[in-house]
Length: 295
Image 1 (cartoon, rainbow, N blue to C red):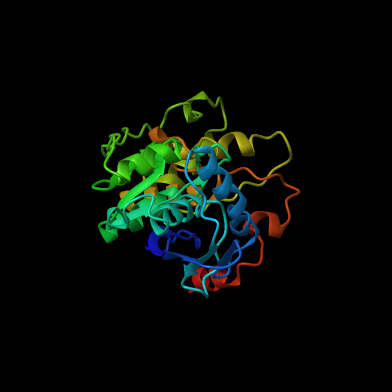
Image 2: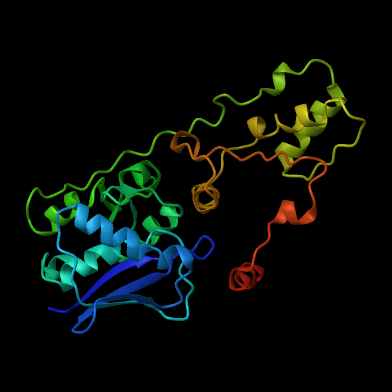
């Protein structure tokens, strides 16, 4: 078979639209082309995939390889497409059975030796895969983050050989689900009880937290504004499941440090007073994402 199809997910804000990876092998001079609005990191996957396949002991087809990432009008970015492209090439060249790819999604970046490296945006990918009823093969380093999603079928992968052996029926992988850790909303968080004095400010914090009011601190440097503000999350009620998931997805796509034990802990950001408006709200050229969030 010279045509194979695998599935993965793109990253558009906190959404993860489905991407179909079609791999076709044709006769002619050896070539490797990727189409479907791939950005630079996706185009460079050609060299990573070639080296990963060869160093894993597989034959890299000396044919004309065309990889189509559909839908064609959706921009593709990041290294998450390495693993589905490699699996598609193996299936199209007959080195793994194409029927084993049914109801499977793949996500992961490959290094030159075939190891599977973690990627960003795993949480939205796991949610979308669960809602589609698909099995998700993902890097082992992303398992703790993805396993926050209940009733999802996750297969952690460390190396390309490990995954290909599973798809061929040798040494099958078992789905691993790490139970979601209980959220500890007050672990290592500044405590308002530590503040001495400032009775009026502490009362204002308590009222704002109880009634979900906005609060503005005004005063000279060193008067305790940041100290008090950093203790506000410790007296706020726990986030709901939906709020916690939205917050965790933002951390997932932003490459921010993610601790599954604190995924329900309310975030606290402390930008410098000289930060510009662009530094606060972000920038970039993802106009489709900006329009989507605006609606």
